[in-house]
Image 1 (tube, rainbow, N blue to C red):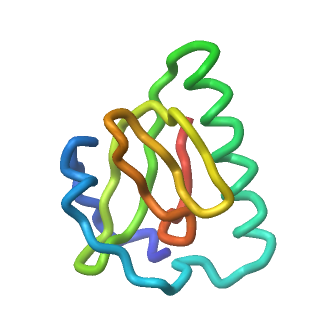
Image 2: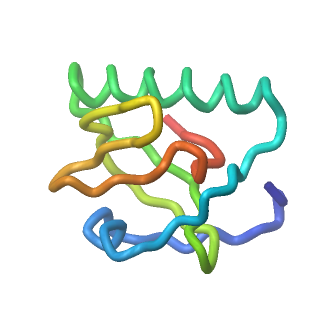
Amino acid sequence: MNTGEKFQVIDKEAVTGLRFPDTDVLMDKDAVKLRYEDLQRALSLGNLEHSKIKIYFEDDTSSKVVDTTVWGLTDKRVILKQGAVIPIHRVYKVKF
């Protein structure tokens, strides 16, 4: 992820209309592990405290960020309110 890269802020409702490629945005194995651990923490914060977090991700056109609560997590997807999902392999980072 380029630190100078701009992330477009979107509403969580807009996530359902996005398309995601199959490639992972992270190449480093440690970064992939840290991403999943951060997502698990975000899920706990969402369920216990209803805390919102920022998810930085990329769809098939650009880099985006959404401020939301994580409602669920599978081995492949981050589940947001109203059934919106972001594939884990398209997430750059989570900010608490």
